[in-house]
Amino acid sequence: MDELWQDSQPTTPAESEGTDGVENWTLSDLSDLSDLTEATPPPHTPVRSKKDTSLGYELYLNVRTLVFVLAALILIFTFVVRIIVVSGRSMENTLQNGDSMLVWCLGYEPKQGDIVVLTQRSYQEDSLVKRVIATEGQRVDIDYDTGTVYVDGAPLEEDYIKEAMQVPNYGEGVNHVTVPEGCIFVMGDNRNDSADSRYPSIGIIDTRSVIGRAVMVLFPFQDFTLL
Amino acid sequence: MRGKKPYQILWLVCTLALAGIATGVRLWQESTAFEGDGGLPIRGAAASVAMVCVLVMAAAVLCILAARQPVVRPPRTQIRGRRWDMSFFATGDLVFLALMWFGAFSALAAVPMLFGRGRALWKAYQVAVSMKTWQGGDNGVLSMVTAVLALLAFFGLLQIGRDGYHPGRRGRGGFWAALPACAGCGWLLETYRNCAADPVLWDYVPLLLAVIAGMLMYTDWAGMSCAAARPRRTLWMAGMTVVCSWVALASGPDNGTAMLLIAQSAAALAALWRLPINLQNPPRVGWKGNLDACSIQDPEPQSVPRDQPLTPQPEPQPRVEEDWTWTREESQAMNCTGENKEEDTHV
Image 1 (tube, rainbow over the protein chains, first blue to last red):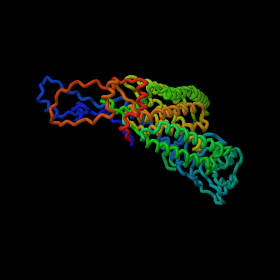
Image 2: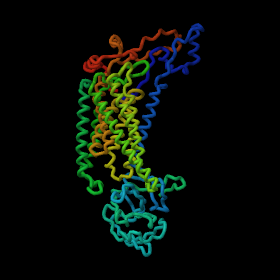
Image 3: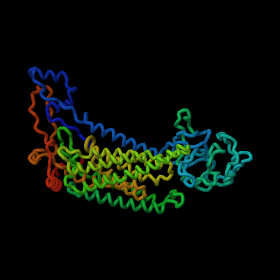
Image 4: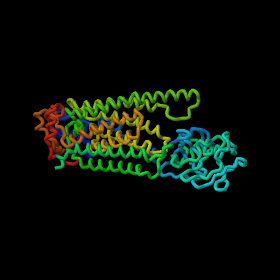
C-alpha cells in the first residue's frame, strides 16, 4: 500500500549500474579503464547510499524497533499474560516471598484448586495470591478442631498446606458459607499466616476481581516450576 | 476527480466526529457500566458493548479514509531519495504551528506534575524502606523518568512546528517526532506499572491504547523523514490517536497524564490538518527558475552497458534540492492550484 522510502536512485552511468560504493567495483570494471591513462583519476567517485550510512536512519530503526516491541509486549502483558511478584508468606510452601509468577489472564474462569491472583479493593490496592477452595454454589465448612476444610460436605485432601490449620487471631471468621453466584472462596496455603476469604474484610471474592491464574514460577530459577 | 476532494476537511470532520461520539459513549459507560462501591464492571452493560463498537468503527472508518487518501509521490532527489519529509512542511501555516506549539507546551506543563508525583512517591518509598515496611508498589521512578521524557517531547514538538513553519534550506521534516515517540515508551511503561494489579481492564485499556496509538503515530511521523514513509498509516494513526486520547481524557486521568494526552492529541490534529494537503499536492522545491525544470517524478535512471568504457563525467550540476527556498505566497499557490494532478496516484 504505502510506499517505502526509496533511497537515492543513481542518475549517473556508474551509479545506474548499481555501484553502491567502491566495494562493488570488480576486475571487469577495472579492465574497462584500460583505455584511460594511468594518471587519470576515476571518472566518478561512487557515493555510498545514504540509507547505508545515515545516522538518522539507524537511529530511526532503533526507535521503531523499540516502539513496536514495547507496544506488542504491553498488549500481550495486558490481555494474555502477566508477571506478578509474590509479596508475603501466605502461600508458603507453594510460593515464596519474592517469586515471580506467570499469570494467565485471557478468558480465564476460576476453578477449584487453582492458584489465582486477585485484587480486593476493599482490603488493599495490591494484588493477592490465593488458592481457590470453592466456586459458586459450593458449600464451605471449616473445622478448626480437626484442621479440615469441607466442600459440599466432603473433606479436602490438602497436601499443599504448610502446617495444620489453627484458629486465626481474628477469630474463626467466615467458616460456614455457601459461595454466591459469580464468587469464589479462596485461602492461602500457609493457613496460619494468611489473610483470605476467612477474614471478614476480604470475605467471598467476586470473580471479576480475579486477574488470572498462576501458571508457573519464573524467577528465581531454582524455584522454577509449573503450578 | 478524487485529487480535488477536500480530504483535509474529511479527515478533520470524521476524526472529530468519531472522537466526540467515543467520548460521549465513554462518559455514558463511566456512569452506567460500573458498580458504585467496588468499581467492578457490570457484565453485559450496553455502554461497554457500545464502547467497543465505537472504537472498532472508528478504526475501520479511519482506515478506509486512509486507504482512499490520494498520495502524490514527492520529488526524488539525488542524495535523499523521495522527499517524503516535505509532507509536513507548512510554510506560513499558522494553524499547524499553533497546534504543534500548543501540544509542545502541554507536554511541558506535564513535566512538573509528573515529576512532583514521582518525587512524592519516591520519598514515601524511602521512608517505607527505612522502616522496613515496604511491600511493593509504585516507587515513583517511572513517573520521574516520564517527566524527563516529556521534556524531550516538548523540544521535539516545538522543533517540528518550527521546522514546518520555517523549513530552512534543507528541511528536516518530522524526524524530531522520534523524541515524543521515545517519551511514549516511558509513559507506556509508567501507565502499565500503575495498572498492573487492576483487574478491571476498562480502567486503563483506553489509556494504554491512546499511548500506543500516539507512539505509533510519532514513529511513522519520524519515518517520513529518514527511512520508511508510510503516509496513509501515519494519517490513520493520527486519527486513532485523537479518538483514543479523547476517550482516555473522558476517563478522568491525573493532571500530568491529561496534559500528555492533550499534547499528543494536538500534534495528531496538526498532522491531520497538514498531511492530507501535502500528500495531495507536495510542496515543490528549488529556485523559481529551477522549478520549471524540476520534474516531480524524475525518470528512472538509464542503464548503461557494462562493457562501455567509462569516461570522465562532467561535474554534476548543482542539485536542486540543495538550493530550494520558497515564499509563503508560492507555497500557498502551490497548494491551491492542484498542481501535479497527473501524478495523483495511490502509492
